[in-house]
Length: 585
Image (cartoon, rainbow, N blue to C red; front, top):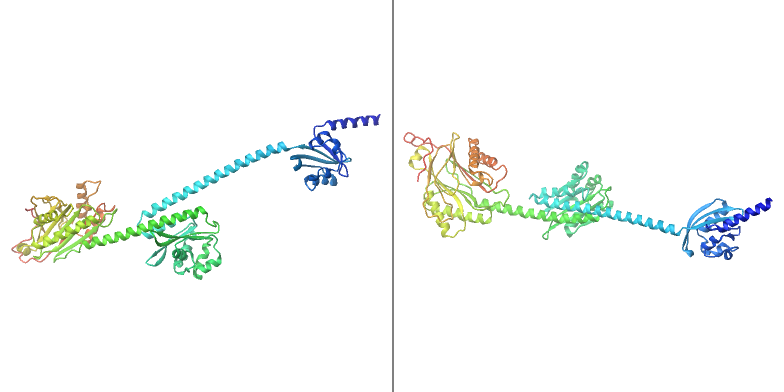
């Protein structure tokens, strides 16, 4: 019964395996198919009859040497079960395989995992695609952020460097802006009259600034012709060394400079020439340390653009400075030094408008007539440019020539000058005040002087008396020069007592675009009174400092005359006057 029962159970087991949906085969010790169920044969593209008894490696030679043979032989040799997945090219199928050793041989069950692997691969590819897209987006965002920072840097460079005309200050601003965005440290070289100076200097590490200065102080005079800056200046092109080797450093400079450079540990260096309008006048050197390494392409592109902008800004500053110096020299050459008659002290000041070219139409003049009288002139041509300066030169010459020729009273001088301006077609409009410091025999005997003046639309003068009293010297104010005025012009007359100071000035000294004229005039009187008793030069400088604390909105000319005491020749007959005389016509 046991045998019959055992046979029955074996038959039942065989029926179960035969009908099992999962493929299964058994390989005997000679690697022949001892058994394969229908599902297994069908999955392998065969029938049970065509595979049973066949050598597995002959039936499927493509499996030889691959993962199938490796795993099956390992199971047969060790008895250790194996589970794996492998691709079988002839059937274009991924197999999920489980194998174990039995008394009958190596038992193998397997499934078609191709569909599952395809779904997994598609899922993995989708995840990878999303990750790649996210990486590209992040990279794009980072690139956009970097580009934005570099664009802002270029704007900051343009704004900072055009805000000053001082070359040294401009290049220092450049160096401080590019560090650390483009480099760990920066030196900017400027060439002036054939001499190179390393002016702009900046380092990201405050602890290395002193070492940078030590090296920079040596660099300009120790660089060999092979060094980046001499090469860039000679050839007018950028010099980029992405990995600076010791032998290169040795070829570029002297032992002393190399010793100074060592603590700075340069890794990469990029030098860009400063070229604008075809002229080369400096170079920018950017340096990185070992931690930062080579420059990126974006850094080099931005540095190249930055150097071009810096060059243009520096060239504009140089041109503006040169133009300003020429203009100021021209202006001062037109404003001749005043005379210094006996017992009169004269001081003059000229201040150009703070926001414009240092030349304009304001002028002063002082000269003596043949009879010994001193003529004082203050004037203001509309505008503060070269045209105004040219018109001012013509007016100054006219006033000088006419006043010297006949020694007329100031009102007549102004009238004749105005007629000459109209007759000679001098296209200008100007205010002017002509004054004459004179002494007749009586005044000479008492040691006093008399001031006679006429004004053509010009601010009235101030008189500071010895006791500190400030007096506005009022007189009829005629129309400005250039209007062709045909009416009368009238002189004002006042005494100029010993110790008094006469102040003639243009309206730029007290007038402000946003202020009240009366308030401005009051501030001027207050400043004059505060400075009473000071030497004449101190008085003039103090007035400019007090009234132009925020700079001059308009050109300013100032002429100050101090009457020193002189000995009286007939003091008993002519007592000194005690007050300012009345205005006369």
